Image (cartoon, rainbow, N blue to C red; front, side, top):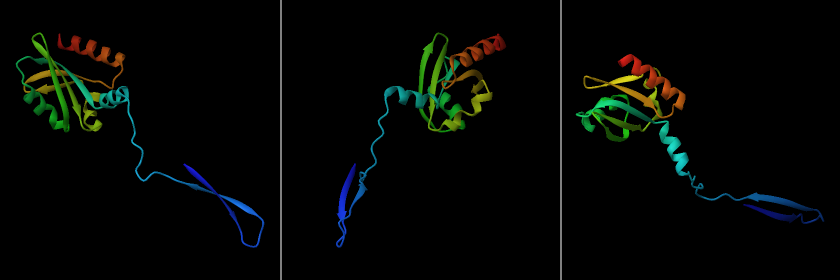
Length: 134
């Protein structure tokens, strides 16, 4: 918001315009759409597949918490296996998975796919790892 003042000096007929900028005391709240929020969490989330069904969420959390603080862990069943989605508080926790495609939960080897990867990267990892594990 701007306010324009017109000032006239005492012994002169000249009028000067002075512009004042007014800013709010509190910064404006940044509004994010659900799509933006999802995009923000995708850069901090990994998908873990091929977890044996007998593994408990606490075991999965304990294994992956070594890499960083976990904000959210969600698991769902997939036959004899389960899938986990792990969201870390910091994106730095995912740097390990840029070059490492697998991880251990106890003695079990699991596959890891960062959600920030594009579809081609996911397909490549799934194809390569399925050949490797067979």
